[in-house]
Length: 418
Ligand SMILES: Cc1cc2nc3c(=O)[nH]c(=O)nc-3n(C[C@H](O)[C@H](O)[C@H](O)COP(=O)(O)OP(=O)(O)OC[C@H]3O[C@@H](n4cnc5c(N)ncnc54)[C@H](O)[C@@H]3O)c2cc1C
Image 1: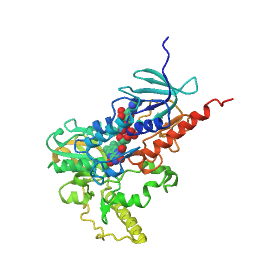
Image 2: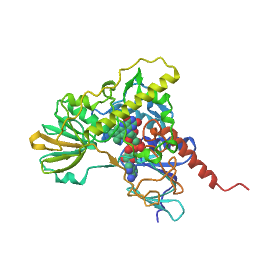
Image 3: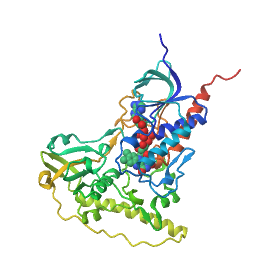
Image 4: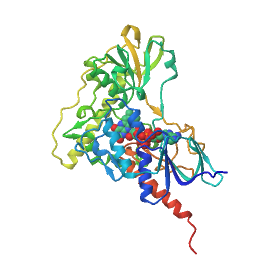
């Protein structure tokens, strides 16, 4: 009988979060294995469009002991540069990794640890870190099936460039970071674009002489932990602010795009045949996004005034366009719409984890990534601890913390010397 391979720690997922945990476990001298079902850098390489670039500035890329060291710290890396950055990190870490191995089941083992079923056979572990990312399953509403098959539909995860879509107008659904950037990509290519504007907030890009993120960093915003956040755990559900890192970075005011010919609609409400219907919330969604935008500017103004900083003044925000009787439905054929890009997000896939680590809605429960199941951890999720936790900014701190917790658990279980 062949014995089942056992590891003190197994990390599921070899993205930036899994590799960061590996790096910190190595520093702690903890033996472990990383299982990655694709290959290192998969999501950045395979799940983003061709013109993708970071929304966060390069100086926020702070993988553990491997901060961004390129020549453009205030710029925004494009897709290939992000992949190279991650590959460089992997080269430094030299993780004990098996690529092309998927974990298909995780359950409590008879020995008190964990049993894993993988595409490479069964394994066991004393501790397991789930580093599979938060963007597994692309969300498309069930009513999408009711749309005429003449219209191509795809999720943002499959969008690459405008030439991939048939000629004609394109409807982008969703105005989060992906939606507005894909809208801009299509607009620059000369496509007629329709955009369903949802409730996502927006942020200034440069304000009073600096990138808004630099001000927010100075103001301590990125140090705020979820347990001190005014929204508490509900902070995890907040949609990211939209702005762009494209061509040196700029803010995105959808009202300006409307003036330039992009057709804005309310949230998608349903579809049937060639007809798509919209909620009556365009004016509210634009106003709400602007309110957040203005409140960020106000906070920065207050900080500058209090600290007595000499920073250039900016003119007040003035809306340049407002919707006036937009239709609650359009006929795609009449509008020449040949394709729809869904950019309404993702949900994680935890169907393979058979452990009581989830709330009633299937969200993982944890405090700083430590789950209520002894020896099980999560990492790489928004607001795991801070805003930066689901991003390049916060994963170093989160992974160092988890490595310490795992090291301490191992030490506590060592037999005491006589
Ligand atoms: C459109 C978009 C834009 C973003 N923009 C920014 C930005 O500007 N700045 C920023 O800092 N962050 C940004 N992020 C967020 C974040 O940095 C990325 O999502 C990042 O990839 C998260 O790293 P991760 O390691 O947690 O997850 P991932 O990179 O998704 O890695 C998880 C890995 O786990 C593997 N895996 C999954 N399931 C299994 C399994 N069962 N068995 C084995 N392996 C498995 C996957 O193949 C994958 O390689 C963006 C995210 C998206 C989606």
